[in-house]
Amino acid sequence: MRASCRSACRCTWSSGAEEHGDAPLSLREKGLPPKRILSGVARSAGCGADAVNADCAIRARGLTRRFGALVAVDRVDLDVPARRVYGFLGPNGSGKSTTIRMLCGLLTPSAGDIEVLGLQIPEQAEALRRHIGYMTQKFSLFEDLTVRENLEFIAAIQGVPKNTTRARIDELIGRYHFADRQKQLAGTLSGGQKQRLALACAVIHEPELLFLDEPTSAVDPESRRDFWEKLFELADIGTTILVSTHLMDEAERCHRLAVIDRGRLVADGTPAALTGALAGRTLLVHADDPRGAQRVVASVPGVLGVAQVGAAVRVLVAAAAAANAAAKIETALAAAGQRAQVAATAPNLEDVFVAVTGADARAADAERAA
Image (cartoon, rainbow, N blue to C red):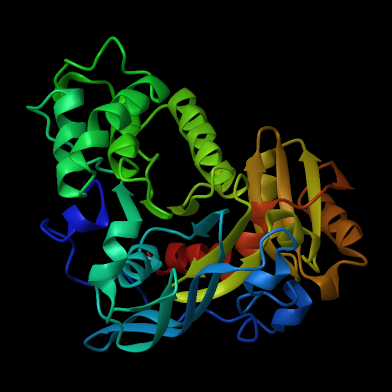
């Protein structure tokens, strides 16, 4: 069962490395120095950058994990402020889960130092486990036990005092809306209900720190919204939450986030700070043929990324090419026989992600190689 780190130790983890390619395409390799794209994002900003919470729940320096010749996590520096929702944003196989496993003490780093809640990890991992909760996208419930029985079992595993167990379970059943389902088998619950029960199990021992590894990937949008409301409630009462995701809208909800790409920390800060630091320019192109326009615009020098959004094409342009980018795009489209209107638009977190990871360039390379 993997409702928490303690129970996760008894379960099957993916013991191999996550999928990784070669070292990430750097901005310099594209002829674009990092500071021209996004300034001050290649290292952790430190917990002191958060004026409300200057203390750290997690500090990591030079965190590295190798699987043979494969570097799954590469010299990551991390500072997670206490009592905040801190996001790990990255594609599948970027090293998020491997990093979380090292922070939990479930996987020994190849190099680097970790301090979690004042404890040295992995040396003091056993002492840490009573103070943390853990939840994955698979929820890891006992489907042949009822809602209440799942909570009772996890309470026993986590060492919740017997004289307080009943009151704690009653509290969670009310808070997570299981009053009319506490005798229902977990296996018969909906995806959103299983998610709520898994979260209740993960926090039954009132952990100071909660690790969530892509916990919303299998539920509907309404359940996701409700889940995030529960996370902010936990943060409000003092719980530090580290949540990994590959979803932009979830990353935007976090107080702070790190962008992880092929094992490297490539950005760190609040969502507003990251979008505000984007040195390039974001444009919106309205053309007769959006799909055709997307192909034309992608070939314009200085364009870092293109994506169709409804009937328009969203374009990210490097800072060095930003001054006359709109005119160049209009000229290129006119030469292709397309009438177009090009206007500036505000950057978003997806633009930041494309800029710091070179995601569109890698996708284009893969398409050409196919």
